Image (cartoon, rainbow, N blue to C red; front, side, top):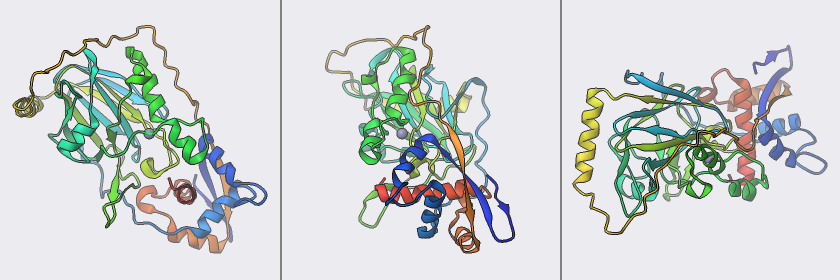
Length: 358
Ligand SMILES: [Zn+2]
């Protein structure tokens, strides 16, 4: 990824995956934007502007130390269904920084009771924070989990990505997406595609303009940034790596996320009890008969995620002195540091997303 500087020219290897190349290829050819991929990258550089997006200063603060019960590394294109007992803590953590995740939650003893993102948004706003509750759907409307601690943003405004979105925007029907990833992760516990619910978004950054219109902006999470939840009942929690490598939500790339199940410290239990007691002052007994349907692990489950493996290849571009100057003007050091390939990929994919209104 590091360029080799020659006397006049500079080479940069730009890593792209096969999903990105498939979409970019639709701009390549006679009477299209460019004759080949390196020329398209230079065309994007030529029309690019610098942007101010920056990650927070310094390193992510160290998370509280607790006894770790289980650690999962969730790879791109994948998710993980994780059972938690009431009181246990789930930390979702950045491995590299910049990766958005989606999140589903169910009552472990009844698959019909699940996170209601809309209700949670109405009560706690667009970006739930420390002490805010993840509420279940009617007729229960109870606390499933609460945000215990976090160094990065949550979002409840944007629906998870699905195959429809990639088909609509890019005419691409073979693309990693949260709907299908969650479906496959949840299958381990007997849940169906119809059980996937609206997403609670992890590490997702949204801005509003002066008219109040919102848009997804680049991901500002750093390596080791985290969001911690405490289970307020026995739950099945399902985080996944968002499948969107064409937009700003994960800075045009897919990276692993880490999930840790931890035992609570005494202060965690106190905090959880306080949140729960306050919430239950308002929780009413259900007025309708509710179906019961426990979630049971399928011991024979073997994961089979669609759209994998993700294949990555480098495209080499050669920059003359004018292009080198332009690259130095527009590359974003805050997000990408010395990684010239990632900085150039942002320039290329920003060009694409502006054309596709993504
Ligand atoms: Zn997604």
